[in-house]
Length: 259
Image (tube, rainbow, N blue to C red; front, top):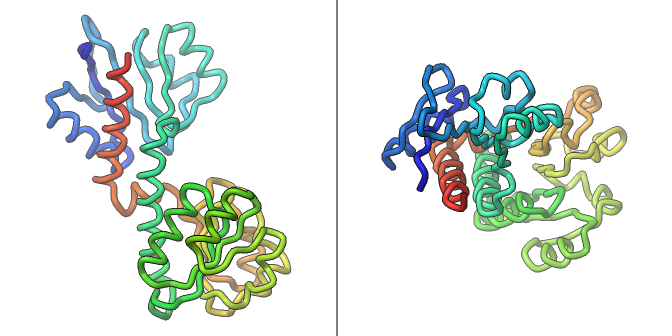
């Protein structure tokens, strides 16, 4: 493999572990705060998954370097092109996304346990969406003997959910049984829990929103109706930063081997 110099963002707890894992593999690793030169080396910048890389960030980086992050602005991509840099989205790695979804599901299980009054066993739980995260959530909830309902409009997802969940609805049907659930987990980044739907919830229902901003809940309505809720973002970095860091490190090294 070509000689790389890794520069890791340690503002995110995952970054601390990424740095240690790379050192264990005998790579040269620094933090963004460190000074260095790139003579005979290619700098590889690993940003926090919370970070959107913009033009000001790119201008500070070495020419002909490589960036791993989650998101970037279009203006930043233009500057990268001018500086002959490569950008890779960590979320383009399907293996990482699937493993990261399971870490999120584990964290969701912990949040539900801490914010409800009963055991997970036999607890009626609604999962909104059945993508990678919805599948992992259903798996881990069923492993803990919860009674899981899934709501999705995707035909293939609906068919799969009908095999693994206890009950499946479309997104135009699910709200008819909203009063039954002790927990609802949303994975859809569209506001689908709002207004009159929130009035239908059981008084003790806990709503956990795992969707990226703006989320799937109208938070003003949730507050007005006294709904217990949480918008949890970056869950793997909060509940399992060491494992999440390992997955990112594996993603980065695997991609670099293809260059």
